[in-house]
Amino acid sequence: MAIFANNDKQSNGNSGTTIIASGTKIKGEVVIDCNLHIDGEFEGVIRSKNSVTIGKSGGVGGEIYAEKLVVSGKFTGSCDCDVIEIMPQGRIDGQITTKELVIERKGYFVGESKIKEDGSKFGTLSKIEKAEKADKVIDPK
Image (cartoon, rainbow, N blue to C red; front, side, top):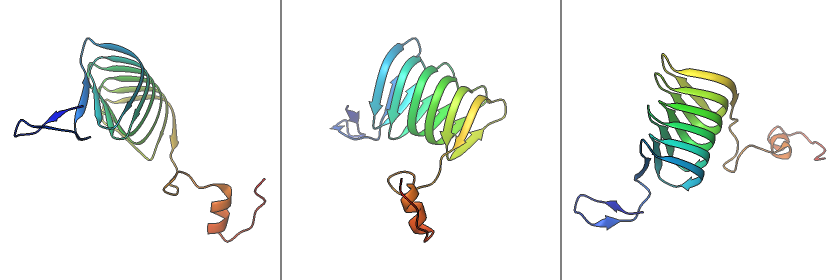
């Protein structure tokens, strides 16, 4: 991916945004480091290290794993994101797992929500790690 800087030279970096334009339909799996903005239609799995934004004309069906999800269009499926924002007229139908959920006025959420637990830097703590923190001994079976 090439990003053009102000001096018209190309620089390789992860600071850009990939756009799926209105009228575009994509099926499959996307693994991406930069931001993703969807105004078209996408069906499948999205794995992003940054934010995924579904624009007003955008529609996504499937699974999303990202740092942040912003929905102004429609999302159907399951997602696991640190932050989820449903904007006015945005809609999520499905299951979400998140640390922070924001639903703006006239935003819609139909489904199941779960709170993502804070854990170690490698994910949630195992039974043994939790017991060690609480100074308890447990059977690891």
